[in-house]
Image 1 (tube, rainbow, N blue to C red):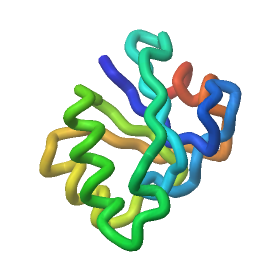
Image 2 (cartoon, one colour; image 1 turned 30 degrees about the vertical axis):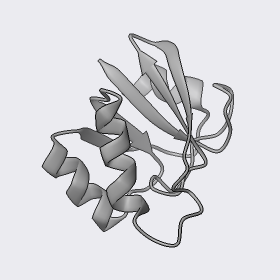
Image 3 (tube, rainbow, N blue to C red; image 1 turned 180 degrees about the vertical axis):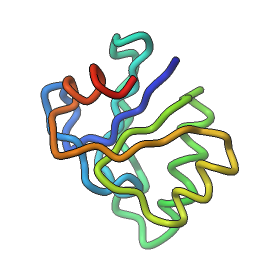
Image 4 (cartoon, rainbow, N blue to C red; image 1 turned 120 degrees about the vertical axis):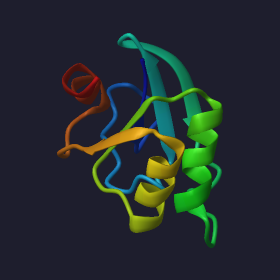
Length: 101
């Protein structure tokens, strides 16, 4: 299972982002191992992050997304793509992967 965690930094010891669509980075784990760090080019976009981020994560084969909060557009798109998602408290990425995968 591939799990993407919205992160404030590109480090697995960084904090989980409270904004899924606007998270600066996504750390993608498979079976608990970090397999990719994606710098979210939609984080600073004027619009469309809630639709574009799920599409990019889907292309990367992500099965589940973890973040502090999800906007309505992102929730809708994740549901359409069949990607599971969960909100998590303000914890670090490493702890979130352990708890949420």
